[in-house]
Image (cartoon, rainbow, N blue to C red):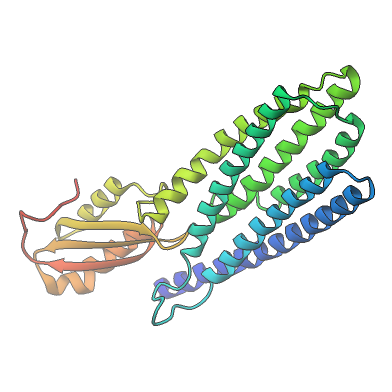
Length: 304
């Protein structure tokens, strides 16, 4: 009874969180679409290729948010005969996509900054300040929408980092615009670009590593495989555990399969397996499949 209530409570909590995040994504998408449209219109009006190209960049933010929101919605869909785990892993794929896009953006920023160092061009500091200033507000507000869940969901963290990276780019542009307006030193623009690129790499590296690990069915960083093994062995009547596999079903859910050696298989079904699953749930692993064995197998790849 308690286990069922806990299961329902977990699903209810996840449903509420997903509803809140869907609203946050909708607001973020609306903000960025409006900003990109306004920037595009201003670029056409003032015949500024810089504003037009930046509007295109901001549309990539909208794509990132749309993909993250789509993955979140797909993760709630029921499993099918062909997709027996449902579509939960789409959240992992989108977080990896966001990480790759951010690193690609770093490459573009560095290349453009180097080009400006080699061939400096006159820049209108005032126009830069106002345009980028609006971008700072839009991107920071959008990032703030996800700050509550960014450490619980890698997919949300990817969207958050994407918006924070753009906010930092805009801050760097504002600072460079002020320096250019006051001193006329045009090198402030590419220098700010390189500093921002370094900050993006440092903040995004962990997202890339974690996303790659989960996409390869590696053990999530939030789970200690050795501690999981020890926890299973601490359960009464468990003699050993081997063939332990832990992987991510999504950016928020983990699964496990294991072979457990016990003395009495009848007791295992009614007492040992439920005790193991309770222990695993306390460690953040809600989906566990336990195979019971009654003898040790020296040839097995036991966890250590």
